[in-house]
Image (cartoon, rainbow, N blue to C red; front, top):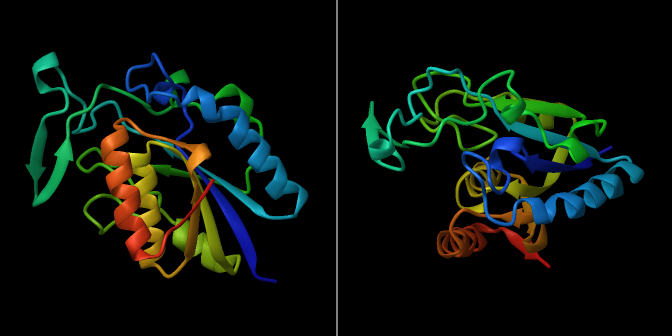
Length: 201
């Protein structure tokens, strides 16, 4: 049986409003995502969570205010210097309380390597190292994905882009995503729509 899957991207404490890398309006989508998860479960569909799961020595952690949000290039890959966030085995890296105990079909950790970031749930930013998500979805014969969560302009859009490149049919719900920048989020969604993303309200 071919299944659909819901991918919930990075709904972690450190990405909630007021946290080190808080995404505006992230808290406002938690209940809506919880309801969507329950709809998938009630229909026997897969639910997958992704987590930023960084080592404390991650290369993209800014060590001073001057470094914050600066862009650097390492081995030909562009990286952004972020506030320290989602360090492995910390409360900040935990999935938010309302969602953490959902019966996840799979949890995908990303950003594990200290020398490369990972926006996408499929691949690190160098597009070399896979997270295992694609192999898992293939093993479950998944063809259609709904991708929601944070942040629209970075991890959500990167996950959608790779999903399309891997051949999945992808939808997102505008009410179940939140971005750091509304302008960049809109730009990314428009670009992805041209690639085949279906956006629903």
